[in-house]
View 1 (cartoon, protein in one colour):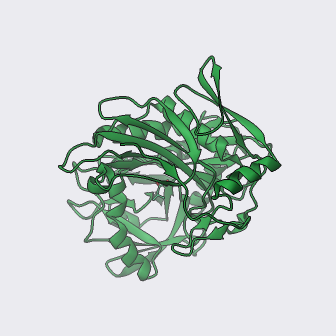
View 2: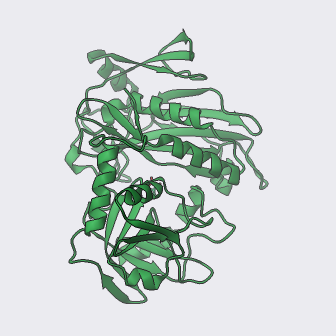
View 3: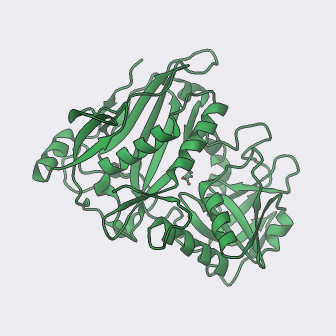
Length: 413
Ligand code: COI
């Protein structure tokens, strides 16, 4: 079965506009005519070279490292209102796709215009949830350079998740090269320094048809990107969480420790109920004892008491966040004691500060926690000192504003 990229909702205006159905921001260049017309105004070639890559358009050049591909992209930033970016989809120019059959390895990928994909109604991902996703960000520096943060970690995590979900995975090198190619092809959508980042969403899915329950016969690796600002509507202001005592995100032996799509569908009910009551999000408890912290719907959680920062240990039900891991290392270098352990609700309620970490949320301070109808507030509704200190240290590194002594940042040009 072949999937083909196709266009929909062609637009006529030059300015980004909102999709009437779901409110997402639409690119001014979704119509192929506009895409190509816009390029005739300014054509700046970007070389994308890595083995097994071909593009839907552009010329093929032989190169020492494999097949070299030239695609035309504009480097000049798009005309977006960068100050009002939230965490919603903005359609960009290109996405990356690569397919392989069950039992084989990923080999040839391609950059194609961003658009809907065609998929069988009986695809494994649609029927049985055989799918994973990743999330990472690219930042634009003042000198024009573009930075990625620890992309190899995402590639490694996708490989581990793929093993759990019975899927073939791109190698870490293929993953990173595909991310780089997708970012460079969409360079003009990277927000200016300090205005946000380009969120990169790699997907791995069982795209082949199955009816009886089994691993799909074909897999698709796809990467799309979107410029984003803050994840929570609160921006960097503290969020208010409610502890969920009935519904659980994950169970021992399940898939909580990998980034499978079903983990996120499973939290929607509790999250929607919490939001309807005015909370920002939900903090889940372990499903066995119902007293140890797990994570928030889309991020990990940390509890601060004096000089000790604690976070739930990774034990199969908690996502091994890359921001989580980075914050632990940053906190250690700043002289904090960090404990990865079972953290109780009592410790949470007794904390000096609480914050969440994730690629999308970065470091998000928690202003209050509600548990069984009782609320506890942290600080005087401002951002806690430790959260602020760690947020600053991490984001300065990610944006290339401080020396990268950890070797975490990958420069694209
Ligand atoms: C991320 O932080 O990148 C995530 O994957 C969370 C997602 C629900 C936005």
